[in-house]
Image (tube, rainbow over all chains, first blue to last red; front, side, top):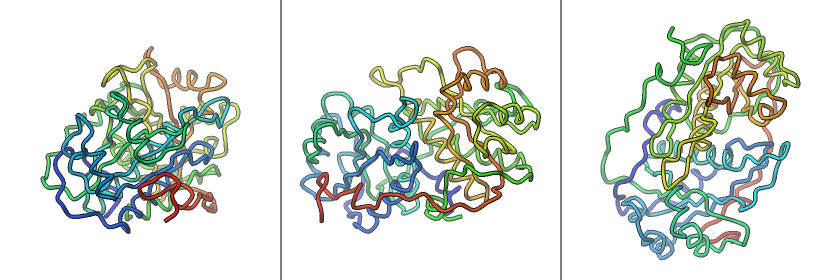
Length: 179
Length: 179
């Protein structure tokens, strides 16, 4: 799929997934896209645990407050970062940016493969969910699940979320200038 | 360009750019890709100032410590965020992630158009550079340049930066497990 088409078609899919499993070859291809994302000072801070074991996936799916996508996902990709990130430049870490860039690459790959997902972050941060998933995935101490992507074949088609137009968010040469 | 090819070909380009200008139509297409990126709660927190005025670009290019790409860029895309981000979910803001996802979309668009760029962030945070560029772009108070993308036609080809292999950063079903 053309990159501009994938960018345009990518959606945050919160509906149910079909029962079709996602082949390991496709999951690996998606994560390879994540591995190729840029990272501050090429530190490659994000790690990935791919869940395709049905029992393990079921445990994540049954966490309280899960949306339909999480409840019915055939696979998950968990993005792992450090609890205490290492500075890589002038005292700054870029692991949040690194992880987000990897997630975006993976969402585009997912879209191109005819699959769907949604970027799950805030939900992990409350109610101890990140910690619980970390235990299920055997994370060593110091590592944390930052983002979770449920992956599967979407059951429904959804209308695209509305985005503000260019003129409200972008300008040439001066902030807020009307050309 | 196919999305997997764009992901594979994207590079952090720090070399010189040719003098060929980047047409506004292409700059707009790149930023449209950024506008389509996901954002936490669809808050669309990132704004963009596109610099293609040669005098203004020259002022950015001459900031101290600029790499060759910044020194010779025919255009810049500045990504603007809030100094004090609004929480959108349980007290959390996702504007860093929002901005990073938009940047990654734009880097892939840049690659697909045969142009090159590099994600400039840390360099802005020291020596008052973000503030200086903010003044040049007329940012209102409370807004800040978070990422700067120099854009142009690359003069050189560079070898791809080496990335760790899948087996060192990704595993199925359990962190660190060898399958």
